[in-house]
Structures are given as C-alpha cells and as structure tokens.
Amino acid sequence: MEKTAGREGRPSFNRRMGRHKDAWIAAVILVPMFLFWLVVSGFPTLFGFALGFFEWIGLADTPNFIWFDNFIDFFKNPVYTDALWRSIWLGGLVTFITLAAGFGAALLMNMPLFGKGFYRSIWYIPAVTATVATTQVFNIFLDTNNGVINNILKAMGKEPIVWQYSVGWGIFWIVVYSVWKGVGGAALIWLAGLQSVDVSLYEAAEIDGAGRLNKLRYVTLPGLKPIATYIVITSLIGAIQIYEQVLFITNGGPYGQTEVLVFRIYRDGFWDFNLGMAGASSLIMALIVMVATVLYYNWSTKSDKRTTIPIKPVIRKGKRGESHVRNAKGEF
Amino acid sequence: MSATRKENFKNQFKPAYLIGHILLLGIGLILLYPLIFMVLAGFFTKTEFTSTVLSIFPIPKQPTLENFKELIIGSADSSVAMYFRNSVIRTVYNTLWAILTSFLAGYVFARLKFKGREAIFLILLATQMIPGTLAIIPTYLEFARFPFAGGNNPFTGGTGILNSWWVYLIGGPSINIMGTFLVKQSLEKVPLEIDEAAIMDGAGTFRLIFQILFPLQLPIMAFIAITTALGTWNDFITPFFYTTSDNLQTLPAAITRISSVGASPGAVIDYPMIITLSMGITIPALLIFAFFQKYIVQGLANTGIKG
Image (cartoon, rainbow over all chains, first blue to last red; front, side, top):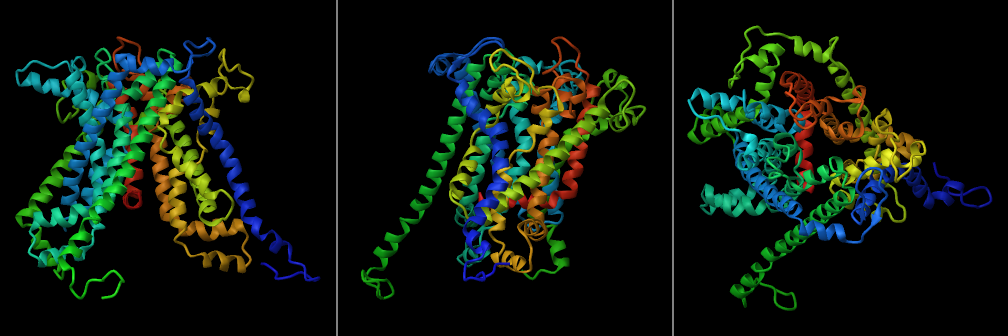
C-alpha cells in the first residue's frame, strides 16, 4: 500500500521509488533470464555468424581469418548452389501443395458437419508425431527388399523399385512426407481464418444473388488476406528449412542429389568438420529467411493499401456533384 | 439459421454434405495410416517381423505385447526403458522452464514500464527470424570448448559439458520467445484494475503474478506447455549431437542412432527395434494431444489470427 506522505510531509519510500520500482522488478526477472539466453542462444548465434569468416577445418586446427572466401566459395561450388536452389524450390513446392490441400480441407471442415472436431483432430495428428519416428515407418514402406510397396509391386508381378537410388522418387517421398505432416496444421489455420470472416458479408452477398463460387471469390478470399499473409510466410520459412525428412528418408543420397542447404550445413559441421563453410552457409540461410520475411511483410501491407485505394476515386467520380458526397470542405 | 437438430441431421445426407464427410473421413484415415501400421507392427515378435512379407495391414500370427512391455518396464538386454525415462525427465524439465520463463517475461513486457522495453522486446522477436540450425554447431563448440565448464581450450578441443546431464540442464531454460509474445498479448487484455485491486488488498508482486494473473492465463499457458512438451519430446538434435553415452539417450536420439543415419554403413537396420521406439515416441505424443487438443486447436487459431 502506498502512503501519500510521510510524517514530515516527505513522500514515502514507495512513492519516491514508485517510478523506478517497475524497472527494478523487470531487472530482477529479466537479467538472469537474459544472461542465460545469451549463453545458450545469443552467443552461439553470433558465434555462428562469425564462423563464416574463418577457415576452420578439423577439430584440432586453429581458425584462420579469411574474410569472404567462404561466401565466394559458396556461390562458386555447385554443391552449395544446388543445395540452396533445391531448398528454395522444394520448400516452395511443399508450401504450395500443403496450403492448397489444407485450404480445401478447411473449406470442408467449415461446413456444418457432424463430427467436425473429430475430423480436425485426425487431420492434425500427423503434426504432433516425431519426424524421427514417422519417417522410419515411411522407410519400412520404401525398403528395397521387404518394403510394403515393393511387396505389393512384386505381388502384382511388377519389378520392385530401388527408391533410394532414384533422385525423383527421393524428392517425391520427401514432398509426400512433408505434406502428410503439414496439411492438418495448415487446414486448422485456414479454418480459423474462414471463421473470422464476417458472416453478415455472406448474407449481403446472398441477397445480391451471389452463388457458392461468387461468395468464395468476393467474400471469402478477400477476408482471408491477413491470415494468408501469416500462413504463407510461416510455412515458406519452415519449408525452406526442411532437412529432418531429407536426413531420415534419403540421407541426401543418391550422391548428394537430394541434399538441401540445412542438410548440407549439418553435413559440413558434423561429418566433414568444415566449420567455416557451415557457418557461411548458415549465415546465407539466415539472410535469406530474414530478407524473405521482411520483403513479404512489406509487400503484404502495401498490397493491402493498393486494394483499398482504387475504390475511392471510383466512388468520387461516379457520385461527383451528388448531394451525399462530401465536397472539398467536408460538407455534404 | 434456425434449423432444428433433426433438420440439421437430415442435412447431413444432402450430396454436398455427404461428399464432405467422405472426403474428410477418407483422407483422414489415409493420413492416419502410417500410425495404424506402426501400432499393428508393434504386436509382432522381432523374429516374425523380419521374416514375414509385409503387407498393407500386417497382422501377426502370434500377437505379442513384448514390445510394449519392453518400452515401459524394460528388459534385460535393452535400454529402451531408460531412453523412455530420459525423454520424460527432459520433457518435464523443459516444459516447467518454458512455463516459468514465458510467463515472467510476458508479465514484464506487458505490465512493467521501464526504459528500452519495446527495444528489448523487438530484439527478442527479431531473433526468432534466425534459423535455429545456425546455432547447432556453435553450440556444440561452446559446450565442448569454452572454459565455463572446466578449462577446455577454445581452439584445440576438449569435451566440456558434452556428454553429461549438463547438456540437458543448460539446454532447456532459455527464454521461450513465442510464449513470451503470447503471454504479453493476452495479459494486455486483462484490465489493469485487477493489479491495482490486488495491490490495494496487500498483495506483493510475487503474489500478484502467481496467484492472480497466472490463473487467468491458464489456457495460453496450457498451449505453451503442450507445444514445448511435444517439441522436446520429439526433439532429437540435442541428445543426438551433444551426447554420446548410452545412458543419456532419449527415444528419438536412440532411433536416429540405429536408423540409416547413425548406423555404420552396411549394417542391417533393426526395424523391429525402431518400431518399438517409434511407438514409444508417438503414443505418448498422441495421448498429450488427445487430452489437450482443445488448447492446441485454440492456440493455433489464436496465433494465426494475430500473426
């Protein structure tokens, strides 16, 4: 409890300290947490950025400052540029399929069906499973000798496929796995978006004679804009960093043809001990993710303005001189 | 819409609705199929699993509960029960820290006024943009070589705290930034009068935080706890990269070790063991999900809209 004044008309301790009390509590709570965060997260991140500027191969070697050589190597060496390019298009593909399928599912889940909660749950279940565990089930399916799919092919009298030696099939299964894991989450977020669209707009559209498709086109899609920004950006950022499924399904093979950039970072760091190159690749990855985030954010906020601007002149032109439109002085 | 329950029930059999049901259920079952396969395969004995020709629905001739038993009670020649225990310890520890740190930090940024508050919060949020994989190798070096754990030389190597419980103890209690953000957002909606009334009644900061504000945030805390628990439970990176000894492994790391990634080249992959361990990871995760799915779904929806 705060006293208004002390005996000699002097403000009480609490009163005097009042302005600084918040800061004290904040410091007591935040400083230990922040120090800890610096040790386990802040410092390794900065250290990771710094690693890119050193040549540091092997475990007993001393680091050698080489300016931007690692970065130049990165863009000269097809191993890295291929991995980077594969990250980008694979991430884009996975995002596109996941979001499209998720959107379809969300439209279905938005119908007044019985058992909606049940459907939402079973669609989301793959997302809560561990990549480590569920990719192994995929591997049992794809096993060359006694895999389920090859057993079926054999039973049908066809040649079994050696999935692990085919780049196309490797990528295919990585995409299938990623979509399997991601589609439920995407559907849930789209669903949240669909349910946040103003119901009165649908009623208005119905009165204007809009059919199912027109309602989707003119009410639902524009209403989903904010959530689309969120889900596209987060999915893309996530998908560009896919590597666990690559690690467990193809392990980068055959001959590194399914490597993605983050997988490459892991390989450089833990197989080849090429720590400088791993740092440089990480830094490039981080920059791409940051630039993508900022660009997309700017673009989406700008395009919001763009859709609203053209409407105004149209109204002003059409209704100029009419009594209910404000004139320059703001009168009717 | 004033449709009665009966009319609504009739509606379910209109063509559009029927198609909706069929698609959602059909594709849903396809999505569940790998997990169904996993559970069915769990009833095989190890010898039978490797000797049978696997089909789409593998039905064992002599169903056994050995694998489930090994998972929970353990057996003489395997450490599965120990991996399971390590996973549980690590998950509980990290979850408690996530709840504590995200709530306290969220409280600080939502309620207290001090210089540089917005700046610090923005810096924290910005670090979310940096991919986590960037820190894997530097963290390894830090754990292995930096002298805070016993005088190892930064350049010429060492083991530091690698391969000890310290990896798990230190690797957990950082700041949960996403959680901090969520708590801040939701605390800002709680009227300040509640704080004032509590202080009037003689509550200190400590009481205010834990007895008054915390219970109001239970749904959001549940979301943070569940996502952290699932994330830690499923994480293989920390144990796989930073520990080597068998008695520190968790379930995911153990799988990684015996799968094609960790096994020596040419070794036959022990699929029955992998199935047992996979069930050990998946079934508890599904149970967590089943009990708390309301919060996960709500939380996902909330983060989505605010995003």
